[in-house]
Length: 311
Image 1 (spheres, rainbow, N blue to C red):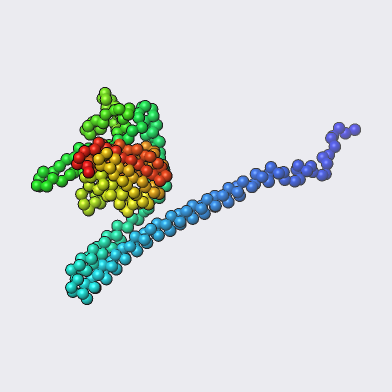
Image 2: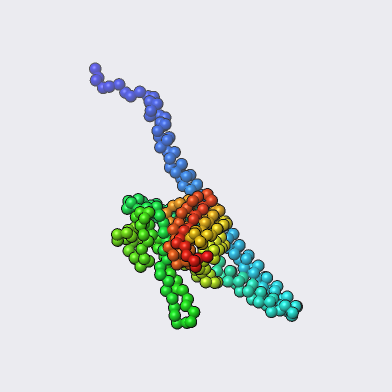
């Protein structure tokens, strides 16, 4: 009698003859990954295309302005030939228009950085300084101080040299403001003048603003506020509108800005607030303290020690 086991059944088990659900699922992810990767590439390409369209539109606006200025200049030149009586004025307008058009055309920026990028960079910096001030136990005062003004005496009329500026965060509300030369150190530890000094975010903006001025920086609150308001709206496009009110006798200037960029204005050293304070401190040659009274719309009050020369 044979002890050989019975032969295996002719029919295979379901597990051997049919693919399992897990086998089917394992074959699906690669296809899904490829589809998602294709979608990501498509979205990235579309994003690049939209950026290029926005940049082209902005460049077209600059170049359209340049063409319009040149057109006005040429038109005034032709009128100057036809109307000899007004040729002097018309030729002057023609030269101004053509020069402005050529300058605008060739100074058209090739790259445009979105406001969101600048806001993200500033937000990270503001958070870092806010943490530092909290760790050091400093007050919530923000005082902007311009460096001492140097003068050139080679000519009869002394001209102001460009000055630097500092943001001083005092330890307490009663801390006195030190002399400008003390801000070379970031941490001020002298009794009665303790605090933190940093370079304001508005110092670079003020330098660009100061270089673009066609007239000297004002020395009164009203003049400086008018110059800064024009720059914020027209040159830097940091806000839609700026309204201001000055009270030199009490050492106060109040400004309200609509659609201001860079987020909430109550963050540490907000660029727009910083620009206003640096400009006023430089023009008046006095420390200027800021107080943000509202964020929507952005409202800021600037205060300084008044004198008879400020009005």
